[in-house]
Image 1 (cartoon, rainbow, N blue to C red):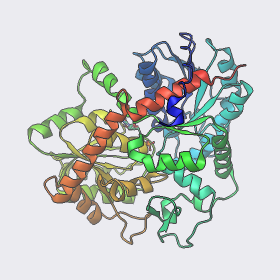
Image 2 (cartoon, helix red, strand yellow):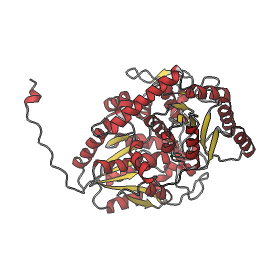
Image 3 (cartoon, rainbow, N blue to C red):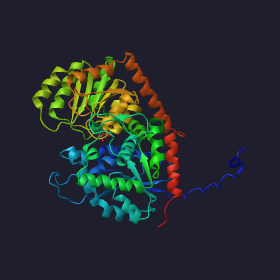
Image 4 (cartoon, rainbow, N blue to C red):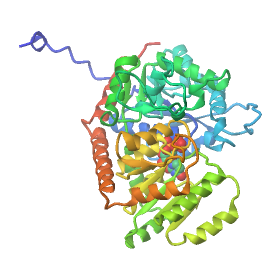
Length: 489
Ligand code: UDP
């Protein structure tokens, strides 16, 4: 018998006083950050019914959050985004999806620092006292706020643990290759995943002095001093990366409490019971009745593609011969091409332009057999949870290696490739059509294999979120840590 098994168990901590746990959540103003954090709020209520949750946002983002949480006890604080001037950002913009170009993302993120004084004033005035702040990673300034107010700060990362790992490794080493397209292994004691410099944004491979580099520097600093990293992932999906981070980078510890989209599941079903069906869901119903499997095509809330790439994608979809539902953001007019294209694909291709759709509802539809996605992390998780195989069409940021992981690591789909094989570049209509057919060939060996893999991960995701599962357990432990580790004022 080991000595530890004979020693008496440590005295159990007394239960916390009811009603005193107060979590403040502050998502960055972009749908890919707001949605998972709203789902985290829902999840906290499922774990502790006597918890107080206050979500901070700005006035222009408030309605979306209020609607999403209207069936919960969450309080919402609308801060006033102070006026600022920037040569390329029009007055009054308060969310990343309203920016004239995604390239202004970091400039906009830098301006959120203007919210700090009001944020601190309101947090200090809240009752009961705030137990912890869950801050978006893009608010590194909230570290100072938390420290001033003696409140623990946890950081929420809207990306995968693999992404956090990549940034961690690359911040601490030089690139082992010069060329942009040569594959390299991230670290010797790391899973055998190879990337090229082209997988990474120039802000990482070739940082230039300026506000983006300053923001990254602030983020790295804040992350290293934060009390923990809350991750929208689950251990069974990213065990190698979570273990790596908790071994090499910890503290702060990484807590994988997702996939958070699974916390939205009950809400969508209950709230939408009496809602009129959208035209696209009616169309999917028709496709199901006609036994036509549908490819869902959507690139999230921010990404933009060039007109040339857009046309090539349209031609690729047309030439694939498959049925598709394409949800698209169309900023500049390409009206003639579009109307001719729509006419040609009538009956087997439906376009939904510049409208917000309930993506989870689409992915859950029985007719949807594939998802051509930019591989934003939320979209990827949602596809996994709904057992829909992916066709990676990466456009920016972490999407290049997410798409790589879809095919090379998880085997839950395929990805488009550029003509010259480089990660970045133009995707031809021929390649797009070929990959669409490959993904949608349900009866092929590969088609069966990827569906089996994605179903397997979906089951693991659901188990992780069930009572006793890895994510459930992580959130329970984290809540206990927040309660018992609470710093006194
Ligand atoms: N989304 C949605 N309807 C839309 C567009 C996007 O529900 O019309 C949701 C999508 O389900 C996901 C989030 O917005 O939860 C987008 O996050 P993701 O990480 O996939 O991409 P991003 O928009 O951050 O690039």
